Length: 366
Figure (cartoon, rainbow, N blue to C red):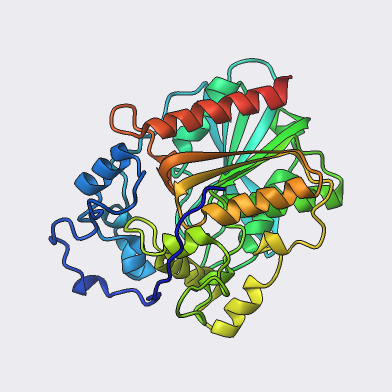
C-alpha cells in the first residue's frame, strides 16, 4: 500500500436541516487548490465546476433527500448507458424478513443459457436503486456477453441491517433455470455497500456449497467500526486505516457521510450501532474463517477513506490462500466508477469498465 501521512479529525455526525444550508453559496465544497496532491486533475475540475456548490444528501435528512433526490445528487458525469438486447424486471421472493424485491435482468442476444453476474448497487444501504449502476450493467452485458442481474434490495430505514444482505443472497440462489442462466457460471459483486455485501456473500457461498466463479468488491466497506458515533476523533488506536484518518473531511465523501448512512441502516442508538459493527456480517474483516473462498477481485480508489480497509481485506484473503487480484485507481474518488458519461465522465471510469468487462468475460468463458 502507498504510504500517506496520517492525520486526525473531529467528526461531526448531525445532518444540518435543509433550510439552513445556503444553496447559492458558490464553491463551498470546492477542493482547496493545494490539497490532495496527486488527485486526478480531471476529477478536481469536474467536482469544482459541477459539485462544488451542491448540497450532499448527508447534509440534510433522508426525508429531504427523498422529496427531491436530484437536488442532492451529483449526476452531471453519469449516463443511462448503452442499449442492450433485452431488459426485463422480475419480482422474486426474499426471506429475512419475508417479502418480494425487484431484479432487473440485462440479456445479450442469443439462445443461452448464459453466464450471469449479479450486481449489488452502492448507496450506503440507504440510497440508490436500479438506476445507480445501470450504465455499468449494460456495458458488462454487451462487452462480456453475459446476463447481468441488478438487485433492488430493501434498504434502511424501513429495512434495517441485515435485511439487504439476505435479499442479495436470496437473489443469488434464486431459480437460475427460469432465467435461462447457466447455474455453473455465476459471479457477483458490488460497489461500496454492495462490495461489503459481496464480501459477506462469498462466505455464505462457501459455507452452503454454492459455486461462485468470482466475487468483485468495488471500493468496499469492509470495516466501518471507526464510524461508531462513540468515536469523536480518529486516531491510529481507534482507526488503523490511514486513508480513513487522512480523508475523513473530503468534500465529496467525508466520514460524516458514512455515519449518516449507518444512522439510517443501523439506527441511532450508539450501543446498537456498536453491537452491529462488531458482527462479521457487517464487518467482514472479523469473519471467523477466511479460507477456501471464491476467487476475488478488489478495486480501490486512491482518494477514498475506505481505500485501506479494502486493501487490508484483500491481504487477509491472500494470506489465507485465496485467489485474489487487486487494483487501486490512482487519483480517483470513491464513486469514480459511476462517472461514465461518454463526453463528460472520467477516463478512469471507462478504464474500470474495460477492466471489469474483460475480467468477467475471462472468468466465464475461459
